[in-house]
Length: 383
Image 1: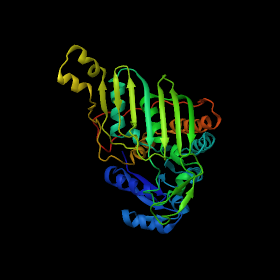
Image 2: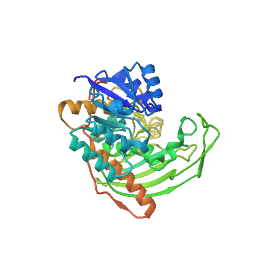
Image 3: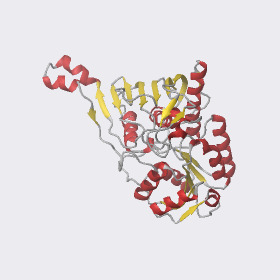
Image 4: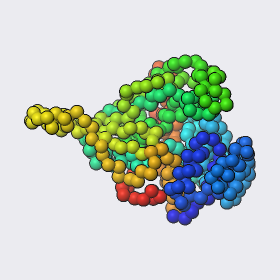
């Protein structure tokens, strides 16, 4: 694979994760420029990561050397900046959410098709070691036929650690837009597209106290619900219990478990690319019927770790989706976090919002294929 020239748009917190990981692991992605609406932030980022050029947004989009732009601007600006990147003839990898609505998603994707550029979107965690190992085990029926999933992202917001948490409580954000894509993309990648949605929302508090950063000690108003509980039904018939919250200090709910007629497959957190899958087989439960021994009783009580079948260089990493996009550009094939998947995840989020508002079941209008799995045993820079 040839080397691709990459530009970073947005010099916020997540840019440092992308830059550190791409520079460390993906040698075919060369960061040649970064930009921010505040050029001083771009200059500081360029100096920190030894990036040759620090730009205004316009300068980045006018740089003919830049082939792919990674859009790391705040969510409220994604549609506007994604359009500008595509209009400049650049291939695009956008942070999530791609757009706040299915309508806007389709419009941006139509512009990309018109301009002949390829699109990718975070999260790309479903491409990393842990969830790809889950995919391999599911495809090989390690728990038989799946029929139920519980997925729970229950935490207390971002204001205790993020230096600028205000954007997380504006319209077009909140737990559903911020964390929902990780869980939804994992579900679709592992088990297939979503058919129907039912949901309810709630708000723990109408204001949030900022603990860190320049505005520490102040209160901000929330413009969106901060808790969602939903039921999703996949086209395969699998039923999913789905909870997303910025209002819960601590919970014992499992973050991600898949139940089949042959056992249970658990994963620690779809927000992380690295994670050890765990298995509980039905035989552990039934063996005590045949052998009433301490060993059999002990096996009945535990989940067993399964090996990850792909390189895990970090638990929390970014850039694999950009590498997949670059390879798709070079080979003129479809990348995995492609337009169909982006549309389907966006509509699912829209469906949860609609169902919570109306109290009615939302029937999906889009679908997608499961992204192609990776082959076990490859190197970190292969996809």
